[in-house]
Length: 112
Image (tube, rainbow, N blue to C red; front, side):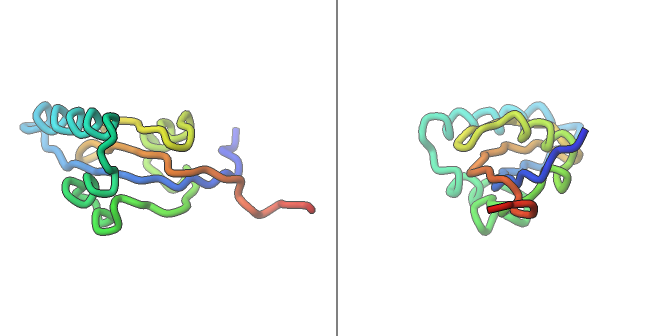
């Protein structure tokens, strides 16, 4: 089964967690998701809370294929539609909140 050539534009907020503070970080991540669902700005929250290197650009990972993501995130993103929010998803080293900005067919085999 192939994931096809679809490309996803994904925003991510990554919160690092250790075994000790995992429950606390998970609770924080859930709070952020709640705020975002109430209309909070994903970009603003990513800049403030994300511990990934993409925090500076508001969590925007740009256009990627799901194969480029950790399995847990790829599985989650595959079931999302543009404008949808998902998470917190547990990945190695912490939790991620995902926002699917947009989705497109990869432009490798387009016949006009």
